[in-house]
Length: 290
Image 1 (cartoon, helix red, strand yellow):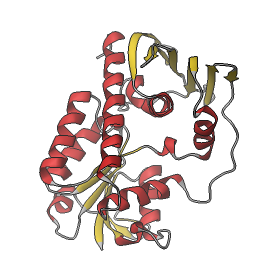
Image 2 (tube, rainbow, N blue to C red):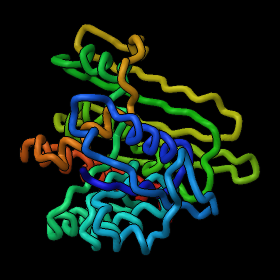
Image 3 (cartoon, helix red, strand yellow):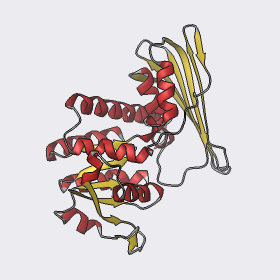
Image 4 (cartoon, rainbow, N blue to C red):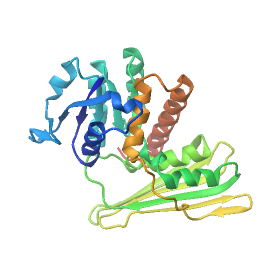
């Protein structure tokens, strides 16, 4: 059995604890057992799991892995702390708010001989899987992805990083991208922000990515992908999956810990994640936002 600690017990952290307490039978996730959780709040227990300190978590020999479920701006420090202690890490996206920091964290994981896994449940949704089937084998001419949602709480970073799930969609669908231009507009009084990034595929086809945020703004995701002889303007509906998204991710992380994921797949995943973080940083720089 591999002991784990959950850092942060908001919605995602609570689901991580629940999934480890009741894992899906017949897969590597059954070998993970939650030994405690870390929270800024004094909670004593959560789902009958005890609260422990970060110092205790990094020093305990029965804790082999950490799940980081905190605000984005604290991911890097927690990941580094657990990697330094020789623990495996599963962290919500983005693992850091800069490309250079992410590279350093991955190098540290390799040096320590442990698994660093960045969660991307948006690639596991049934509607995304259906979208990928629709797109597969088609020649893109141009496209756009416009996401809108409520205001972000402090600590989630610039829109290119907080919204990296959408960028991950575009990279997973259309391959390596480059940034040709990016703009950012903000109305602090209205709590409004909008980022527009102009991207290019490897064969110079244009993609526009927009992230728009404001309190009360309905959560929507609009696409317009124009292919040779075919245009896709709606994400295809798909029935809800039988296995929860975080459980799917837990199984994938556990498979890595058990050595069931090939080196080639691990490399592809690392390249994709670092590529997205590099794009996010380039967009932030073009928007001249610190």
